[in-house]
Amino acid sequence: MSDLVADLLAGKHSALARVITKIENRSPGYREVISDLHQHTGTADVIGVTGSPGAGKSTLVDKVAATYRERGLTVGVIAIDPSSPFSGGAVLGDRIRMASNAGDMDMFFRSMSARGSLGGLSTATTDAVTALDAFGKDKIIVETVGAGQNEVDIVRTADTVAVLVPPGSGDDVQMLKAGILEIGDVFVVNKADLDGADRTVQQLREMLQGQSGRPNSGHHGATELAGDHGDASTDDADAVDDEPETWDPPIVETVANRGDGVEDFLNALATHGEYLDRTGRREGQARERFAAEIRTLLREDANELLVDELDRRGGIEQYVDAVIERHTDPYTVVDEVLSPLRECLDDPGDGS
Amino acid sequence: MSVEQEQTERTIRCLVAKVGLDGHDRGAHVIARALRDAGFEVIYSGLHRAPDEVVQAAVQEDVDVVGISILSGAHNTLVPKILDGLKEYDAFDDRLILVGGIVPDDDQEELRGQGVDEIFGPGASMEEMIDYIHENAPER
Ligand code: B12
Ligand SMILES: Nc1nc2c(ncn2[C@@H]2O[C@H](COP(=O)(O)OP(=O)(O)O)[C@@H](O)[C@H]2O)c(=O)[nH]1
Ligand SMILES: [Mg+2]
Image (cartoon, rainbow over all chains, first blue to last red; front, side, top):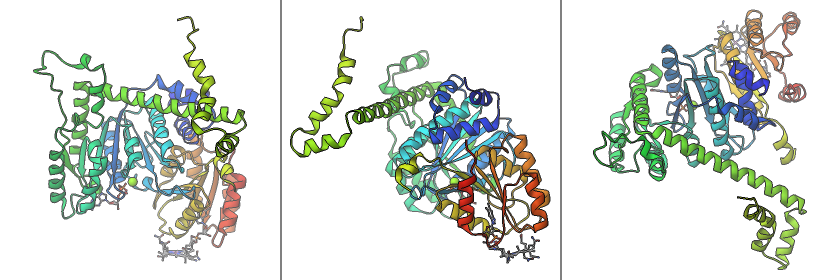
């Protein structure tokens, strides 16, 4: 175990910060760090907060974190701003809203940007959550702009996902149709002080009702049906039939900048947490996450191996030349490059 | 700079912090944008931060550069508090500490003696500051 890992586990704030830096930079040794930290994780409650820019996510997260702190819980926040990936630079402004937790070191807040690769961001987020979990944070909040598939991937790191919808813009509700509606476990109509909040609540309710019968309702719900581990969690005594308990996402109204509705929001999060525990879905979601993570890492690492192999064989250009000359074709090239690997894996001579 | 170089080069993170009862944020905004355009990741604190908030941000964001913007004249009391906090959290040695704004010549030497690496006043050019950061950003 490295000094850095030991320092993090001992509760040193700068070590936690440095580990996240290593994760972001994918610096040499970061994989060993995550490996060492893994066994110390599994105790944190992870909450995802998503919604369009300006919906009030950071303001709400600040108030939520402050309330958890009042209850004696430690909190970690990762605020992801995927904008401006072009120049390579970014101004990360989520920290500006962190006013209720000024100077409180046990409220760990970290800003992250996309660094030009949204794909890598969800892996980095997962690893950063691992670091905060191992550090011993009770609650981990991941804030991200909800706009597309990558944000959906990022938010899957969470046990419970809250979607913020500010009132007044039909567009926002419209946006929900594009995949966001399915991932929300709790919906928050923030800025309830503004005109049109009631209408937005109404619209949301109708859309969610139109959705009833969605796969298990929970945002990661579909997997438990697919998995073969579901039986253990079913309480046979109470189970009237095989119908799995579903989750109807509640709609909460908040005025984040005044702190109104924060308690209601926290109650909704807690209720969802109880639901996850009662139905065994928390474990199911964790299984799904780890399966996805293993698949992603396998894909990335295998890809790297193949890039190296191509280099060893003199680079891709010569294959392209041959393909252009019609001496060979892409399928044959792939078969040729992969054949040593395939032989290796297919080799029955391993004694078993 | 070629694309390959850019990928191998570490992303430099800078905190731009406004501390104390100082409402002059024009310079801080200008700096934040210029550093972003130079390819740095900038964390902007917002106005009216207490020294311990600046420390909290510098530690948690693990910035390479702690940039403190003060035009109020309160640098002699605020900057040492930040420096002490950084030392307390073991986040002083491997960080570049810059002060920008209005600092009279007499005070500059004092601040440097306490651990400030460089001070940039009105009219300092962006190019000068960016070059300075590139040359002096800590090895990690
Ligand atoms: C514009 C201005 C204002 C505006 C501010 C608007 C705003 N939102 O920023 C207004 C009118 C609100 C204002 C108010 C006041 N002001 Co005034 N203001 C100025 C003025 C004329 C220009 C400042 C400016 O914006 N410059 C342009 C920017 C781009 O330059 P800059 O901030 O210096 O930043 C550069 C460098 O310093 C450096 N830098 C700055 N920050 C950082 C950070 C990092 C990390 C780095 C690397 C570099 C860096 O790089 C920048 C680019 O070169 C200055 C005089 C002057 N010439 O500096 C007085 C001045 C700063 N103000 C002064 C005073 C006294 C006040 C008031 C107290 C007046 C009053 N009695 O009400 C109030 C206080 C307001 C408050 N709440 O703090 C005094 C301060 C005296 C002192 N420090 O001893 C000055 C120096 C005028 C003077 N000669 O007396 N002010
Ligand atoms: N009127 C009103 N404004 C709010 C509310 N919540 C946040 N805001 C403001 O909305 C703006 C954007 O908030 P922010 O938290 O940065 O949104 P984010 O982009 O979703 O993180 C800020 O100016 C907040 O002060 C609210 O409940 N009511
Ligand atoms: Mg935000």
